[in-house]
Image 1 (cartoon, rainbow, N blue to C red):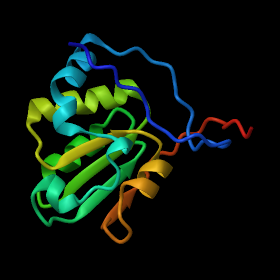
Image 2 (cartoon, helix red, strand yellow):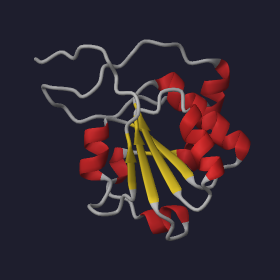
Image 3 (tube, one colour):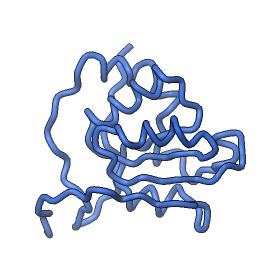
Length: 145
């Protein structure tokens, strides 16, 4: 069965991102099918409890806009004493992250394919994030109406 993953977001006039085009590779689609239940998070599930989600009390790191996920994967591998949640809307990047996380069996990594504003507002409790990362913001112009 093929999972159909689409970026989640609430309707607003102004977006904080532009969904770039890009094809999902066969490996990325297979990753969604195999690993999304383990690594994927949804706005529809509402607020998360990081301790229950990860099964520990490690500090929570949230990265917004991880692109293809290379740095986030490396951090999750090296900083096993922290839990990581990535937020990205670029489907090929989300697929790649989920694929690599599954191959590496990373227990301290989850991701949303959603608008960061919605995730931070609806899913992440205040004062629950130890570190927020935003390394390379999307440079493209945004539609204002």
